[in-house]
Image 1 (spheres, one colour):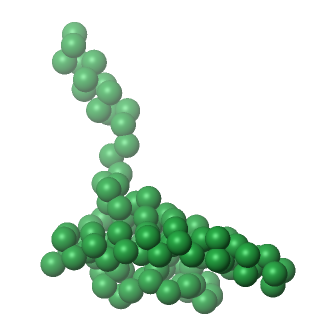
Image 2 (tube, helix red, strand yellow; image 1 turned 30 degrees about the vertical axis):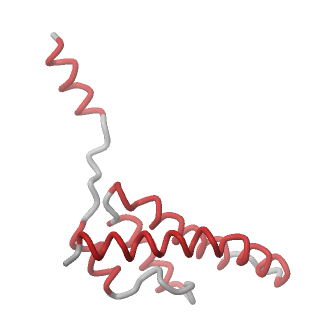
Length: 106
């Protein structure tokens, strides 16, 4: 009975382990290391986030969300305010991605 309970829990959990090979390829192409400048960059950020293994997904999501939010702002003053507020979080997330790729993508 206990064994079937744990099997059931495992079946209900997320099986999304990401795609390390795809993540590494995107990271090696420096996806997310500069601000997104158009739809193609945003699509690549979506791919980076989707491919990210669970232990680096939060950093990939931070970078992707920052670009999405900035890209959608039309008011110039609001754009600058949001960009600078996000700068520290994005800088830290980018460093986490660099460190992760150094340890996992060689």
